[in-house]
Length: 300
Length: 270
Image (cartoon, helix red, strand yellow):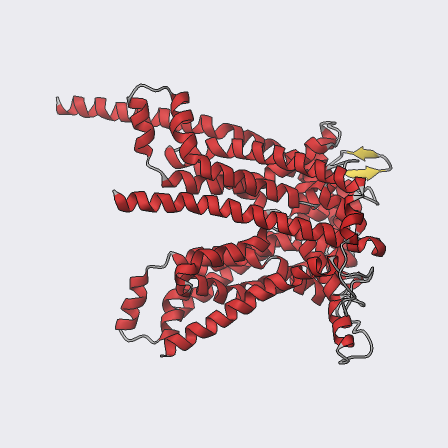
């Protein structure tokens, strides 16, 4: 009897769960379909394109690795891959290091004004990326804000030429433009930390530094890793910043990808460059996350 | 004692950090009122002629109108997609739900240039000609993660018993959605619409690949940056965009946080 009831009950629960799953899937399906059509399918097609060849105006759809051989084999493309990864890595480290104390302040010290701080920090995140990058061109330019300011103060007599059109200008601009992306993930992970753990550590005799290194830092690592990935991956493909402030020494991989799709008109090569750069970024990201986890393990 | 000095140090750092975020951008409005075609110190006097020049330019108005239309369409469609998805992910245990969420959020982890060219390739293969609608499609892809995130945080907050009570009292699924879920989710919907609009209005690179012969505001600005004599008017435009978008963000965040606040009161009350 009890067994029968149990069987019936579990079957009912099962049916309910199944209908719940069915209802959930029905609600998810429009989003899923559009994401498959407008995100997944294009990516697959881009990968397919990278194995094709452009011959004049026609597209040769025989599969070949020729585009990858060009992408990786040509020295100046290789240099651009390295430079893009290097610039983004520096930007990521700088941005996360600068953002951490800020996020820490909002999570632990801002008190009642926390909400105002959060809004102040998110406003730049939503205001025109193009204009934020362009502002740096105005600031660093030959006749820009810094040069004209220093000259009208009489501190220099010639404009400084090293400010604009180099990798450093790209790094400064990106670190500014992406600052808000680092703060939020770090803040969220700091906010989640159980305050009683900190009190326990203090009661057991840990000083502020040890407490930070042994509790706060390791527990906030998911946020740090999230912030780093969220900055590193998109910045390697940034087009606006190297174009506006990079000059010839600050060209990045996105610039040559854009050329293939625009002036040059060699889409398969552009596709291969894009896929190869995403693969490089993926590998670099995995290595980075692994390294951070290993380092975190050693702290404890 | 040590703690307070540490706190003061952090506060000073936080203020400097805010200055780093805001000061570079504030040069745009500053020089938009400067009475000189050159963007350099010393400032040479106050003028509003760059704004007058901007308002006289019909190309700006066309681009602005296009951006408003694209932004509105992308925001409405992305929010309409995000709402059922957020409901499914917060209310039901869906097999593979996290995979769908991962797919929806994937665009955050792909450089915009790759999103742009991959859609361009697809549209080319299926022979869809480029227009403002193809820009809308690209913007939906980058807006959906924001819509789902905002709507999920709102949906997680309110009591699902309200929906069940409505169903128990004999309302159908559709009326329950319309009279219970929708009003409760409204703050989330409004802030999702505003934030998606901002994301679309702001985007240059995807629109650059997908707009064909059409011009959105960021594409227009990009085209102007090459001509030094047009820069002051671009600064005036930039200043207006900064003021408007700041106002929209503050409104969106205020609406969202008021929703969260209400919930806290209700929970304390209960």
